[in-house]
Figure 1 (cartoon, rainbow, N blue to C red):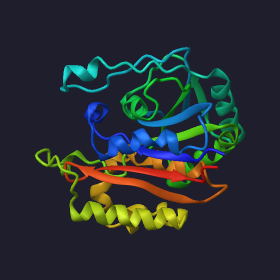
Figure 2 (figure 1 turned 180 degrees about the vertical axis):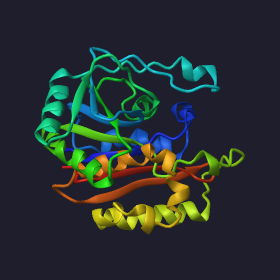
Figure 3 (figure 1 turned 135 degrees about the horizontal axis):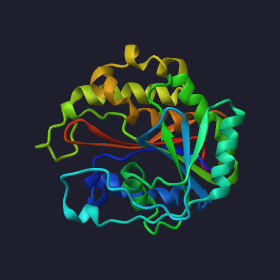
Amino acid sequence: MMPSLFVAHGAPLLAIENNSYTQALQQLSSQLPRRPRAIVMFSAHWEAFDQMVGTMETFPTIHDFGGFPQELYEIQYPAKGDEAIAQETVQLLRDAGVPVGLNTTRGLDHGHWVVLRHIFPQADVPVVALSVNPNLTVVQQYAIGKALSPLRQKDVLIVGSGGTIHNFSYLNMRETSEGAFDWALQFEEWLQQTLTGWKVDELARYRELAPHAEKAVPVYGSEHFVPLVYAMGAADDERAAQRLHMSFRYGSLSHTIWQFGHAK
């Protein structure tokens, strides 16, 4: 069975950087039990009221950012879609009572391809793109991930792409090392204890229970946090969590990799 994963996609520059985090991403595929049949991937940069499931014969690469080096805009990640897995994803969500729609026109945004090009650089694993809805409760988001759990038995890798700490107001752009502010470390350590203990009820109350939650997950920016909840829900049948990597850029932008479920 495939585990499910949460990966931070950081800033777009991550696509061309070489650091401890990109190296960890590049090792991920070798840590999976086998090559995935497909990747079902939630991106924080695709928000929708109803749950959307995206498939195309070949996804165009969306460069949904501005002010970066030209090299980034020249990157292409021509992943194929998987119509069968997309349709099965839609059906699983409908069976769980989740309003869902199929999208056949939207490409992969940088929440998808920035990390995928490190994990599967040849773009040779089919992708099914999924939206996020930050207006849902944590319990509802978890339930969506849980509904997709049967896909893991079919060698489908479920991935949430976002950021456990993502707040532009606290970025120190002069700080290029992997050091972190104390408040950011405190939030991540609370999250580690909560996830490894599989305390879904406490996670649902993270805004009142987690230290510095208002800094780590601003109300206007929770779309980057919720892919973590989807990925966790997808492993509800095993309830095992392990943080595979944690580092930081700019003092507070966290680069974390979480594995949910067992790789076997």
